[in-house]
Image (cartoon, rainbow, N blue to C red; front, side, top):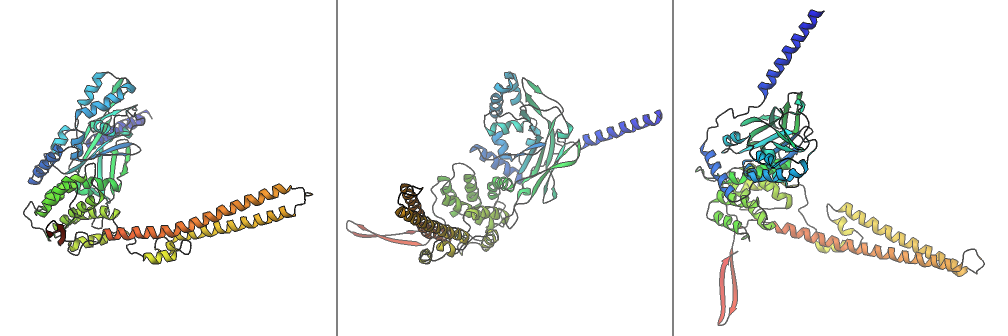
Length: 521
């Protein structure tokens, strides 16, 4: 019996050792395990990245919260924004009064650079990085801004009340799947997590994982749909990985950050466009967009699109018309060079606000097809305004005549009829109460003054209900005409967008006669 117990113990130790070796083998490396050979495309991306860095902030980061993990999603441009040590110092100083640690911890937090080698290896690649850390069970809100907090997370520095090390919450590897298919990682790595607790710094075996994937994983489909992206995180204490689903809006935002770079590459390899562009847009008010339109008219379509999309990524945004025309200019350029996925992404965003968009006949045919595929199901027809006004004779009749608003029209009709019916009932009660007042001889239990007050109150309520019903009737008639008029204007605003400019002839009076001017419109 003792021998068998010893045998079982030895077998258990061997299995534990094998599992430990297996876990260690599966853990992401602490240093880049490959040398990424630079290509001309990488050199061009590095140059563009340096250029946008010089112009200020460009790039957003996104934080996902799971049950066991928190994931910071960043692009190289977002890493540039979060790189300054001053951001980490700001966050550490904000947490200092709560956690009561000395100034030396602030300086040491700024000195953390666990991903320097990995970021250097992927600096010239259009990638997206996922930084995966254990979730904070009790997070301290230091009040120094979201960007400072994200900058600390990129260094593996967390602030709060961290739990003791638990392998169940320790990420070892991660992978990204697009519609269930594995996306090959460009690089993956592991680094320690530094926990800033009350009056102390905790450095245990807790690890973080960073996964670098190609940006093409975030590309939309031809019909404008965003792929279903899932991040699978494995830990040594659990056989099944955690699955974190990326919101579609996050995928679209990440893809949009790279579109200025993708536009810059159009035509730079000597490839001619597949189609010609004769679209014309109104001169924008924004100075950067005016420069982009000048580049477009000069024939440098790719740079013009890059300038437009780079401007739209910065606040404050231009007015709505300039934003719409800029995105349409970019979509037309992408279509002309066969980059339909980028064009679909831009047109889907435009159709979200202008669902009845109709491009001019001179726009590329593929652009028309993409618009029809991505157009949401909305009403792009109109009803004659005199007919809507005439239908207003019936309460809610204008809404009942308008497609898509019939339920609202029924509500207005029933509400108006109910108000009229209640008014009639109140008036009938008032007449009965007044008759009781007239018949009151003073010998009844109810005083005559009480009958009169009941009649007067019921009459006032009936009058108020009648006024309310008439007001609701009038509101329904006016609202139906106004809403249909506004709908007609919205449709007309986006008809034949991009129409080529034509000659405009105008005459004006001058002191010695008339002058004629000729220009383009």
